[in-house]
Length: 487
Ligand SMILES: Cc1cc2nc3c(=O)[nH]c(=O)nc-3n(C[C@H](O)[C@H](O)[C@H](O)COP(=O)(O)OP(=O)(O)OC[C@H]3O[C@@H](n4cnc5c(N)ncnc54)[C@H](O)[C@@H]3O)c2cc1C
Image 1 (tube, rainbow, N blue to C red):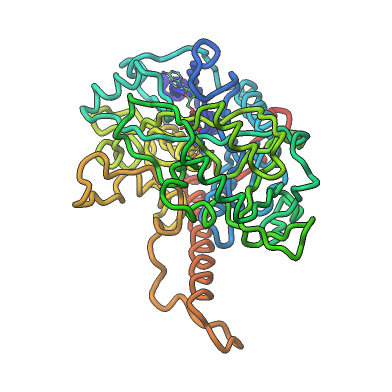
Image 2: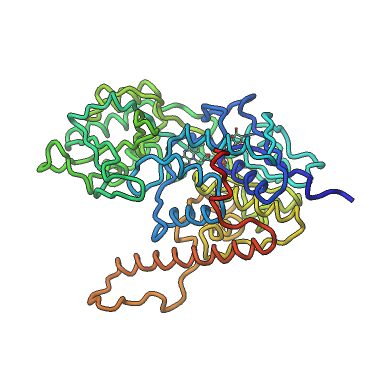
């Protein structure tokens, strides 16, 4: 009889999702072979050979588990013994209410934890086609920049066109090239957050004339021509700054350049008309990224226009912004509720290629794919996380919750999605009640209470799901699973 317990599960792609999936499988006691092509073949966005490299921002976004859906998914992943969250927590840098990380320290920690795990073997190779038949259980987690030959093989298997949209990355500036006689440190509304100080961002103020000149330059700026992708849609959460400027003169002032909650320390009585914020990008504090400034402007144009920003006149850039392709499959049509390709039992997809969006979400789907695959290897049925949890609601969206709209039928209708409370089921009727002693219970207060109740329900239900999973042989909670030595 086949010794199923010792047959490895293959994971293709050692990014956020693949690393997490491999970790979850190995923690369930099953051997894993992780195939990662960097080392022999790069991508347009990755710069290193490290596992779980963050290709753009260094932020895992809000860490508020009481009333923010991203913070809730962080908390659920921590409960499930997530490697990605353990390494992020360990390499956190100050960022107000957000969880931002030292990108190199983070990636190195993931790499050494994976390399050091006795049940994980890492092979540096490109997998050019779909997993061969003798890999009875496999997870494809090759991300938005899946290598072309594998993308073509996926397309041939699914019969569906892979989707593509533009994704743009923001520039990174050397801290010592920023003029602090003009700029000042402050988090918006002085928010301290779990890991910050209230002074985590560098702010560059603009008056009205400077703002208008900046918008004119952005709109007139030379962009990189991407004929190949004409007609592919932008993802609204990651619009290039010049596209936002084209949508209206005021768009940026109400978006990434909004001046609210900020007071110019050098000139407190004059309210800036607009503010550019930069967020710490590495533990040393030598690099800062321009928040929300993803762009497809040509390199020379970027440097010229961004040096118009007060305080950045002499800015030196560690990395300029860029534009990349994003590939994802039509998951609601193609995958079942455990992320398995309906046409090929045993083959799962995970990460951004499934149509979730973001580092955290990609890792979360990797976590689920790893747990489902491990359960299948052990011959046990693992129920999906309840829809009331952040993990369950994201999984539900990808594997079926999405409705095809009449306006945009077909594959274009399924758009990448960040975790948000809109994906969670409504609360029970009557759950939101006026707290005792409060005279007026306004709409805003109700909205806050709704989020708090949804967050608490999610964490409670996630803990219950993990407990049930443990009873069928899956490890549940614990940062303790990650030995400090492995990092
Ligand atoms: C340019 C760009 C910028 C982004 N910026 C952000 C951001 O700022 N914040 C955010 O939250 N999200 C961002 N994203 C979205 C997304 O969160 C990241 O792409 C995230 O890394 C996705 O995780 P993943 O594990 O699915 O893919 P990845 O992390 O990309 O991992 C996939 C891995 O598979 C490997 N691989 C690919 N093909 C093969 C093959 N055939 N054989 C073997 N290995 C292969 C790759 O080398 C890579 O290591 C960005 C995406 C892109 C493309």
